[in-house]
Length: 241
Figure 1: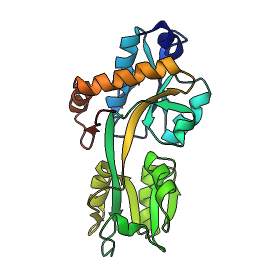
Figure 2 (figure 1 turned 135 degrees about the vertical axis):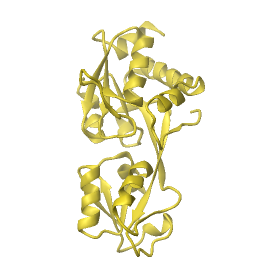
Figure 3 (figure 1 turned 180 degrees about the vertical axis):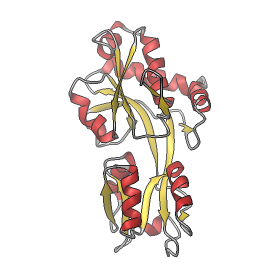
Figure 4 (figure 1 turned 135 degrees about the horizontal axis):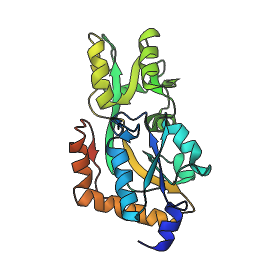
């Protein structure tokens, strides 16, 4: 570790880690002190340990809010889905975990494949500014995206307005489908959300340190152990970057 990387990532003597509380796979609970617990907070704590500084968690209710704060000097690293729109301000590591994103369709739906969803007249419920919403915004050509502010809001709107598909992470959809008789989750995926660690783009030494850490964490089995520790279903260790 270079002193330059330490100065960039912990300029205040502590590693301020932006954590997206909206990702229920990566943040699975709270400690007695109120700190977030899960794979993402543990990754941040491991990074702080490598730097030799304490970690301070900076929680955000939604990933878009975490990304918006990239230039506000409120966090030093952010654990969030890597997306091109976010990469304009954030230097991302390769992914440390991947999460499959697909669609849930209601009973009687004629939609059978992921590809069939992008048709004129099809309305897709989606959580605004999630990583998979950003992907859909770039790639959907004919269907209409109907956005809500939260996971629960997207589900409620999907049901109330009788929308044609609900976009989401497969683990969440597996719980949603149980509430809707006859509903189905489509096979395959439209994308896999790449969960990564980011820092401000000007932190070139810090970004290299984070990239090296993530690759080592995958290769050494650390990421796999964190997934097992928190008993998370639906997370896969990402391939080498």
